[in-house]
Length: 109
Image 1 (cartoon, rainbow, N blue to C red):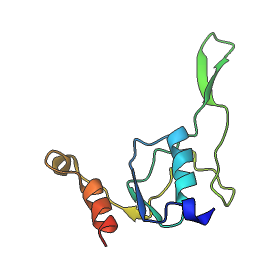
Image 2 (image 1 turned 90 degrees about the vertical axis):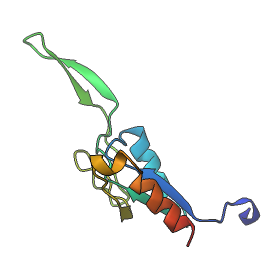
Image 3 (image 1 turned 180 degrees about the vertical axis):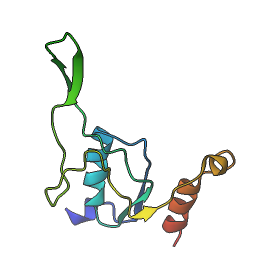
Image 4 (image 1 turned 30 degrees about the vertical axis):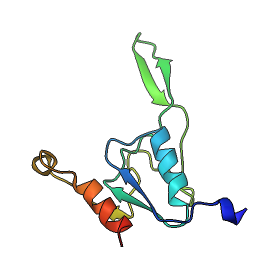
């Protein structure tokens, strides 16, 4: 029932270190009303690696499934873009978290 839904704004922090199942979570959250993804483009790795032995004795790990955007395109190697992009430098992160600061700014509007 509608009365049980959370109706306030939601902000999901993301970065280039978000991958695989976390990216599936980002895709789901992107569909929620009043939800914004804030930060950096995700890694772009759908994952679930499976080993494959090559004839020369080398074993490689390959993704065994592909996660797609709603439009059917695969984001492997590209990542998911945030609604609000914030790309902090290493120097900035020594003293503050610009992604978190932007998220809080959006929630306080």
